[in-house]
Length: 382
Ligand SMILES: Cc1cc2nc3c(=O)[nH]c(=O)nc-3n(C[C@H](O)[C@H](O)[C@H](O)COP(=O)(O)OP(=O)(O)OC[C@H]3O[C@@H](n4cnc5c(N)ncnc54)[C@H](O)[C@@H]3O)c2cc1C
Image 1 (cartoon, rainbow, N blue to C red):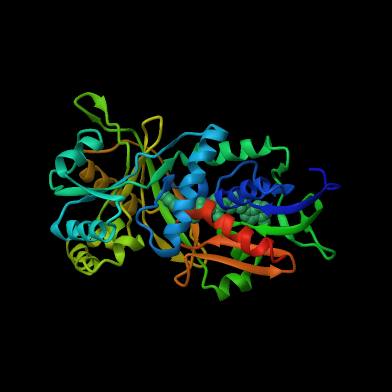
Image 2: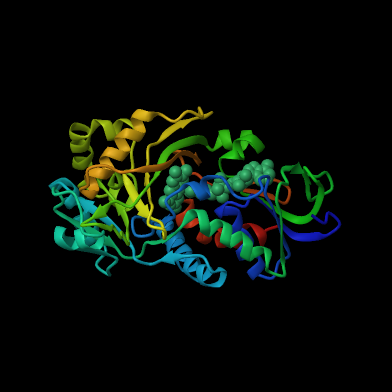
């Protein structure tokens, strides 16, 4: 890193939130330095489903997600990482789940939520689905990327942009006395700093995080082989969501029908409610499936994976797909910043320094939209 250079903007963190800000700022003609304490991104942005869950958002989040959707597709083509606009599929296996989907579909008369029968739902996910399926909603605005490739691909593309430098293994330590920033490799001169440190906002700015009610949410995930149907590996084009997803994402959870669904799931699936599951899956381009997830929110996250939680998720995913068992390749824990008060945090933490953290588990969905908003509102003001 050349510490003698002077930048218009320093971005801390090469997860999706930081990269979204760097891409948007360089497009505005700003000279940008991204610093990342690791050798490549290993945080929440590579541990997730890669699901830009647009359709199930509401209000401002839907606007941010729609803006992000367009950015994902254009950046995918510019930077050369894989994406798909095949949408999502929310599967209903009970009348209560179907009622949520029907209500959402009716609330979107302009489209975006298309109800299909069990036969079409099964066909869309490779020919096998829980025999209990009654139907599904196609979530037409959803897009997906492979999280492990997209964030790396976006960072590599940014490194090739004339206005952007990326310094790996360089940790942000705090604002410098005379502007700019102190880093583990010296002082950086920058007119403005945007800190996108994910859940580590609580290390860097503990008072800001505490004031915003930010804790850490730990999620268990698994990578499994694509199951086979009739000798062929299943091809699952959409992101697949279930009843537990309908309790989580606002466009579902704010329907009148969601209350009855919660009561039903508490009675029929206490094991999923007990781990605060969002049972869903996505398929990567190599055919493997990302399966998850559970949620535990704490100030400090224990590092230990719980095998009973993994077993519950894997058995439930196998049941959803109508297959006997799934073969696990990898398991891991992901952590994101979480606050019950707001879906994201944008705070001016020092002169010229703004902290940005998505505090609701939808960073892949809204980051590109949020970055534009932050630059509009905070850079202009600075
Ligand atoms: C299991 C799981 C599944 C999820 N599924 C989805 C999904 O399908 N769709 C969706 O929209 N969202 C999903 N999310 C949420 C989404 O992944 C996060 O909201 C998003 O990745 C947060 O991005 P980030 O850049 O803020 O954080 P991170 O990806 O964690 O990046 C923060 C970066 O900052 C760096 N950093 C921290 N401190 C410093 C420092 N002092 N100096 C330099 N660098 C620093 C870290 O090393 C890290 O690389 C999921 C999250 C998890 C964990």
